[in-house]
Structure formats: structure tokens, C-alpha cells
Length: 393
Image (tube, rainbow, N blue to C red; front, side):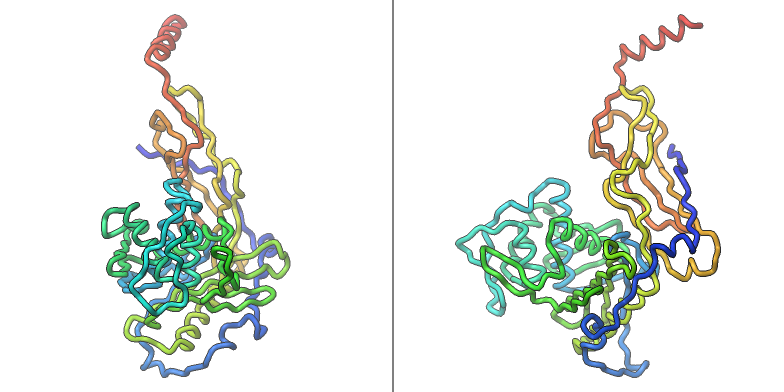
């Protein structure tokens, strides 16, 4: 039976949060994508059917709550999801970014970067070559590596989505896709791979990024365009207006479902959605890395309880308009766990779930894992405890 434990409630009042709010989407010509791209006016009737959604990278919250279905053939999505899956394997210590592989020669002849087949490349360099330098050799090498890690042709993404590497086809929903892309961008930065870098060093040679960048003093924007001009992935990093040590990262994915668009028009539509997401939403860190989340009691174990701490900084995102009406807003942190917790406990195993609820709406569920091994008491210890209880009676 699962038992819910309410740990604590944060009361968010607008005038308090006003100290942390103040992000601005830069309007100077060096940082505004809209001013650097062609303006194409299309009548409402001529606009193709599309899917567009934005999400906060740090909190992994969808900002419009659009749980739309996606069925998309896309080389760009495949590249991003292959990198995401491999970085997950790195985090789970199944492989390492320093592992070396000899590149697989791709049959294509149309490429800006071919790898040296006489050299071994670290996984880190292959991921950089794929995402930022569009290397077909890195693409083939990483896809073959992933196939070894996941023998099934169809790989599960999130809870309800899948990726077919062979067909370059994603089937699923916006939530699973946004979570995967958020994880990818976060993992790149955690491993000191800067998505906004103008150039990268491979095998002691420097290569300029092939991705579009707009770099301003307070706003950085990364633009990825699929080869068929039907899909764009944008990432914005925005420095807090009042605190340079704070920044938020928001991403928008725009998919044209009917036909290709001129590149300028695709970027224009995606950047408009990105601008709205940045300006209309706020992100707050509610739990810092290392903070104790819960002290969970144990029964018949070698310890009376186990402490669970936040493995990373935990953020939530919400609409700024929700704070402007003066109403009292609350964040609830609920721990769901088995009662009693099953023994033995292995370090790294999940022992519960942290549910974050804002204003009555569940924003995210975070698995809680043990950071130590805990065994159950032996049968002899339990028998001795029983005898002691009988003597007292």
C-alpha cells in the first residue's frame, strides 16, 4: 500500500517572489532573432497545421501544458534523442564520455566534417561532432553504439514515446520529448559542453559550430533547423535582470506538419513562441542540491530510518500572471512511498517519489533514490527482540 507524506508547504506571495523575478527578453538587435531573420507574411488561411510547444530546461515543465501527440520523421530529432540516450547511459555509468571509438565511415559524400578513420575519438567528441558539426560519420558511429546499448530496434523514450533509429522516426508526445531535450541540454552543460560555443576543438583542430547563434549581453539563442525545413529547435539562455548569477533556459520546438517552410519563416514562428515563453513564465529554484528532502522511517532494518537528499537543484516554472492577482500561492512537496519500505535497500534504487504540486496542479514527479545499502535485521535479531518484548510482559 502506498502512503502519501506531505513534507512541507512553501507559501509563495507575489511581493516576496518579486525579488527573484525580472528576466527580460532582450530587444537589442544583437540578441533578437526576429530582427535578424526575413519577415514573411502569410495569411491565416495559408498557415500550415503545426505543433509548437515551449518548456523550461531546468524545471522540465511544459509551459503551455500541451500534451499533444507527435509522429515525426526527423534526422534532427533522432540526433538529439540518440545523444540524450547515450548521455543517460553515461549518467548511469554504463559507458563513459572518455570511452574511445573508431568512427564508422558514412556512405554520404555531402558533408562539412568527415572524421579521421585512422584515429579513435572519445564519446564526448563524437557527440559534439554530431550535434554541433553535423558529422555523418559521428551519426553512424553513435547510432551503432546506441544499438549495442539498446538491442531492440524501437527504443522507449519517457513513459509513452519511442524512437526508431532506422527510420529516424519519433512517436510519442510533447511531454516525453521536452523532458528528453531538457535532459540533453542540462547534461551537455553539466559535462562542460557549452551549446552556445562558437567553436569546438577536436583532435587538436578547431571547428566553428554549424548551428545558428544569436549572442547578446543578457540573451543567448541557439537555433537548430531540420534538413527538411519542417522542424526547428530553439534554446534561449537569459540572464536575470537584477542578478547576473541567475539565469533561466527555455526551449521551443516548432513542427510544421504539412509542408516545408522557408528557413526565415520557420525561425520567425519558432522565435515568436520562444519570446512568449521567456516573457510570460518564471522559474524558481525551490530545493538546492544536497538539501534533506525526507527522513523515511524503516521497519525491521539495521537502521531506524534513511535520509533522502536532493540529487540536483530542483526548479519549478509557472506563469507570471498567476502571481499578479495578489492571491496566496502554495507549493506542496509530497513523498509517496511504500509503507513499510521494502528491504533490503540497494544504493541507487528508488524508494519513493517526490511529487511537486503548485496551486493544485502536479508539475513534476521526481524519483527518490537511496544513497546507501541497508539490510533487514536477521531472523535471530528479530527473535531476540520478540523474546525481550515477552519478558517485559
